[in-house]
Length: 144
Image 1 (spheres, rainbow, N blue to C red):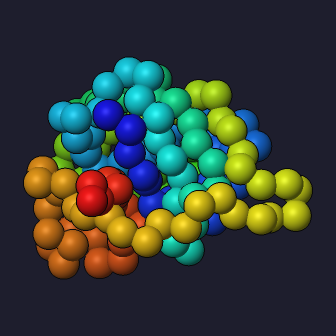
Image 2: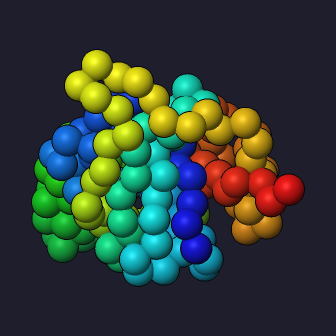
């Protein structure tokens, strides 16, 4: 299933430039599968898309987790400390591997389609319980 993912502007830019190949998320919805298209959204506009290439769960505490965090943080363009802080808030933390980015704009940003309507998935936690801002939510286009 294809999804719209709300991502901060700097991370969207890094994904579309091919610098960021991992997106850190607090869970993986059951509806996403290998090869799904992830539309990257911020400011209610879709700026491009990439392909979901799998997810790696965060290991239990220990030496292996520290090494995993260091390598994943590099691919996610964040520090290991930021990666651990962010992933620790999720109920089932994973590193999403993303490939084949496609930008919908020229170097001077002209966004793609505007997201006018979306719904949270049934498996998403209520917004006020986990992430107060919508930045960490999977958003699906609402079927009309």
